[in-house]
Length: 201
Ligand SMILES: O=c1[nH]cnc2c1ncn2[C@@H]1O[C@H](COP(=O)(O)OP(=O)(O)O)[C@@H](O)[C@H]1O
Ligand SMILES: [Mn+2]
Ligand SMILES: [Mn+2]
Ligand SMILES: [Mn+2]
View: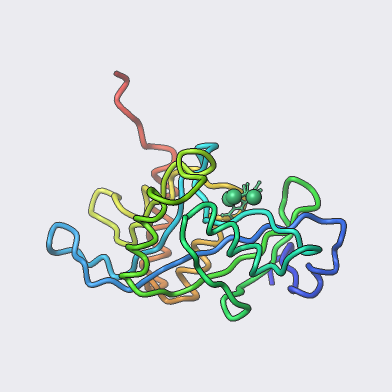
């Protein structure tokens, strides 16, 4: 376990801490970009109100609701869809670097492609937080194009808290990418961080 990781039990015993739960929802897909590049898996993240990328989810109150019930409530608010979350979907708990006394619980759940498409539609049509806490859902590109387009550029954006690490760890653990492809994409993203320039005007 990394230095700030903790067990679920240890995390829940911290009654003086705030708790947040976020989830990586994903599906397998046969779709092909430009009719030739396999998308393979659809992984959902969101553009937050603060301009940072992160996962759907939010603050839960362990004194009033289970972690999973709280996460489902947040998903109803942010995605406008009912996504049942259980203990089976639980991945990890992590003490945030900042702010102090915040514990970040992470989940992942595989759903059917049709269900995921339904969630994407519901997010615009039904989510009370659409356009407010959530500016939009986004898919994570899992391929790398020759110019670094795809995952490397995606990873060059700014992420809330430890969500970038949560994403990379999940892609590895769920075998959504080969370890080599993932390592190369991370390296390329690191190189590009310093070189990506936009047109002045
Ligand atoms: O995707 C994420 N992964 C890990 N931590 C996150 C993520 N999104 C937000 N956080 C952290 O958890 C806190 C509460 O989450 P969020 O902003 O989603 O709450 P809310 O939806 O209840 O307003 C954030 O202030 C941030 O520190
Ligand atoms: Mn929320
Ligand atoms: Mn949230
Ligand atoms: Mn909330």
